[in-house]
Image 1 (cartoon, rainbow, N blue to C red):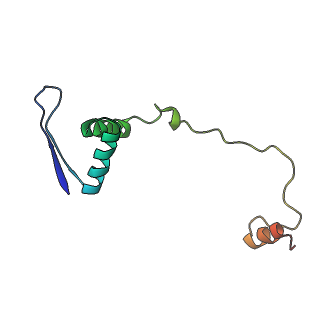
Image 2 (image 1 turned 30 degrees about the vertical axis):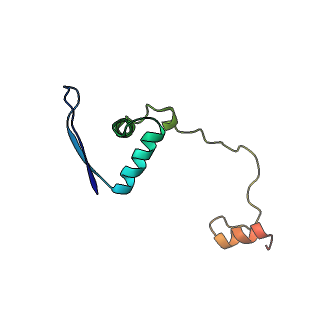
Length: 94
């Protein structure tokens, strides 16, 4: 495990020490480099995503489930509480 030490001299940022698994750190550095960003920016983005309140994201909305309003039902003699009965009906053995 590697330790990252970050030192800042401004009032809005503070010194932070993180213990990050070596493999995770390597992947994070590679991603940051690929995105022409910094490791700090990547970590900050990740924290913002995790700290975001639920319901603020468009993807957090529940999808509408389709409702089938057709007619029909089970074949006579099929017991919906029995897996064997359902499998036999599906195979056409009943």
